[in-house]
Amino acid sequence: MVLKDIPAAARPREKLLALGPAALADAELVALLLRTGLRGVSVLQLAQQLLDAFGGLGGLLHASASDLKRIKGLGPAKRAEITAVMELARRSLAQELAERTVLTSPQQVKDFLQLKLAHLGHEVFAVLFLNAQHQLVELEEMFRGTLTQTSVYPREVVKRALDLQASAVILAHNHPSGVAEPSRADEYLTQTLKAALQLVDVRVLDHLVVGRAGVVSFAERGLL
Picture 1 (cartoon, rainbow, N blue to C red):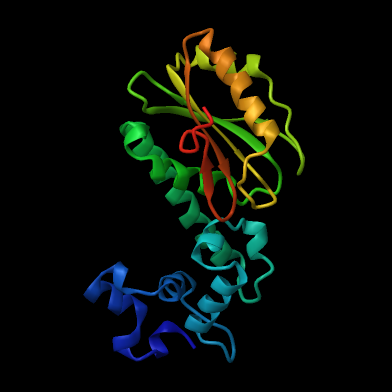
Picture 2: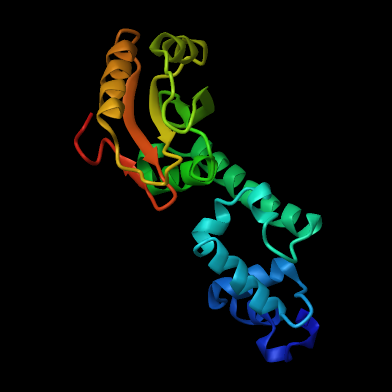
């Protein structure tokens, strides 16, 4: 069944145009991207199956193109469209962070980092370099590691901060296990980087640990 076979009043596109996107359920929004279902499976059913497979909309947004391959009925075109939507969301959030002070939108920073890092199967240590107005200058993935550890070199972070003339940074890394709880090693690394960056007058505003289910802020926990 395709969208045109659904009664007009129940079609996601017509419903969106008449009532706005907020009126649509998650499955209806995903169905608009898919457009067609499979033999014996309506497009809305396929959309719900996709959401169920990834644990809801949040999981789907963090899925990679290779993750989507395991879903029957998702050909290259549909996988590309879903992946493109995720990338547009990342770029939109990055642009907004570059235009406003990050301290006025901490949740936006968390959302951005979840889209960037939560789906990765390996550990990545990233740094958001900020200008004097605490606007985003650059997000860089500084170090990559295995599933269990990452080697982070403070002098490389300091050098890059000086190159970009950053006044402050937000540190971030993901936990491929999906659990965002900071470890003792994370706390030690934070203090080491904070001390190194203080020598060149660069503030560490926060360290965010990214998991699939959420993001933990060192600043909010009083760990900085």
